[in-house]
Length: 336
Image (cartoon, rainbow, N blue to C red; front, side, top):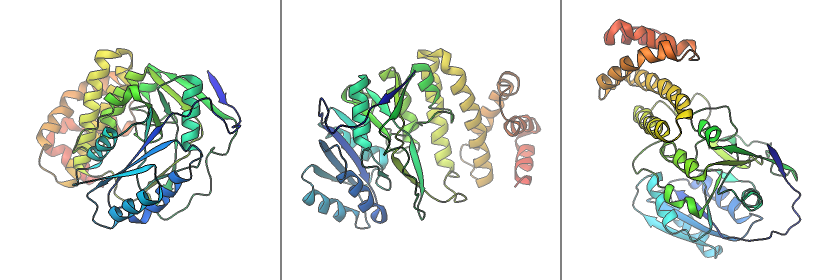
């Protein structure tokens, strides 16, 4: 069922404090844009937490300067521990009734927090999400999404449908920490695994489960910076392995707690498994290669006979593992 956020009349029934957590690591070219977008928010009851994760490019000084010009801000300086450690450190200092995360190379529309908090206050839901608008690092996007609309649509996604979004690409939100407003009751589930890539994938399904679903609002006013298409952003074998681990853990959790959603996660596991193995083969990375092939062969029967909606390429790759490990490697490398 769809509802609408009405026209902003400049007043709200409540003004709860929102903690804005911004991990910072070597992002000088983008940091001013990010912090300016936070400072210009129409919703002003903010606690701004900058977590300098051992920056070496001058970002630390930017953080210190910002704290001097915005009394709502504080900065944590810590040794480099990665994005998860920075987010966890920021959340440990959060005093708000709500929290949001912003990656420091991204930025937000001027009503981003207002849209999220109004949706929460009007619906009473603890987890509010919006979509993202993609920006390339060297290209400014003219479109401002829906952020200026006075009639923003909202839609409630119950638990099963919301969990499907963590492994599918057919819903207007994803398993990113950003673009979401978390009520304080969800903070205990917001623990990101230190040292892992795809840290959001390890975490968000548990938050959604705790929230009982997701309330979506259509402003889509989070601006997400990525490299140009064609750059190698997802070919990191370690990243693939971390993603596979995250999906495996999610599959086990969902099978136990929400079994009706398990087939969706199982399909995503099937795709992630062969994709991870292919990445290791192409990168000539030997560590884990034998164990990954064993997992692929174990999953082959299920993939070929019980998942008819798999795409042709994935089915072909599983089928060709019947050639054995060396035969499959020859097949895969010949298709470059």
